[in-house]
Image 1 (tube, rainbow, N blue to C red):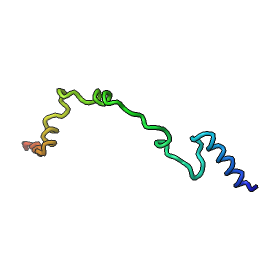
Image 2: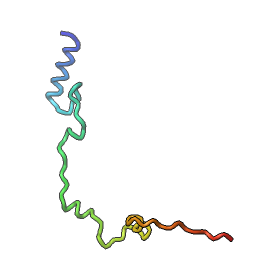
Image 3: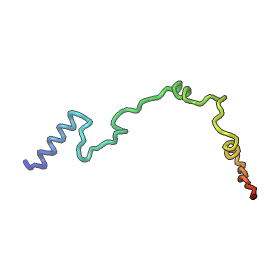
Image 4: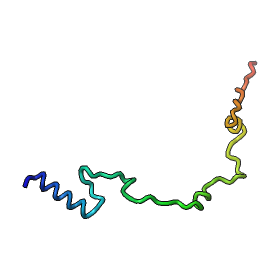
Length: 77
């Protein structure tokens, strides 16, 4: 038995014992290695901003509405 064959057997045994063992040709992303955690709708709703809170100032509201603010003018002395 060659060294490569022995290594394949050892890696296969390790992978069979624990899915987290990194084996050549069988690497999984950490995002795919564990189940997705669900987030309840109530938690999302609690993170939403209060509708009475003003988030944008006047200039930002105008820009969001497509109104281009006029540049400030300077008076020369």
